Length: 199
Image (cartoon, rainbow, N blue to C red):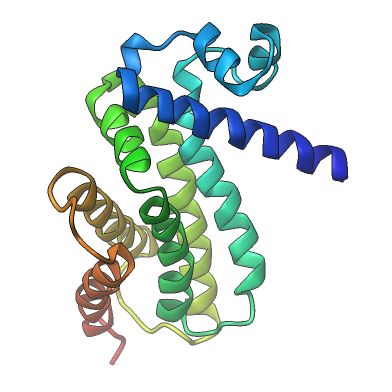
């Protein structure tokens, strides 16, 4: 377990140093050799963690899903689906905001690259399926009454999440709190979901 934690810490360190270099020199201007040198590791060690430079950008989505998995366990006792979704996705957004300009850079690069965006869509699908599982559970336990299909509800929530993230990344660089903004968007979406309640 300790070995796995160390590997994860090293991977996170490589990711953060690489993003810092991307910010200083631009994504295209940074080589794997420079990233390895900045991390104090051999180039071959870099490839033990990332098979190519592009994977650094995809790591953010993967690590967000890992964080979501951990948070699902932490918030398992929350029964209200909206409160649980707000806590889970708010936690993901908080990580972006804590990373500030570096995280904006990563998201911006993903948006600009059609190839990377296609690969990142796998993370988006996983997120949507996790939400669908939560929503189905909430419907089965009677915590959510809605005539809307589970997939549609999950899509609307994911849309609110990514709208918040894209707005923060591309338009609202000075926005103080991305989590508060998401909660406002989620309120609007959730009101629409609950308006379609069973009579």
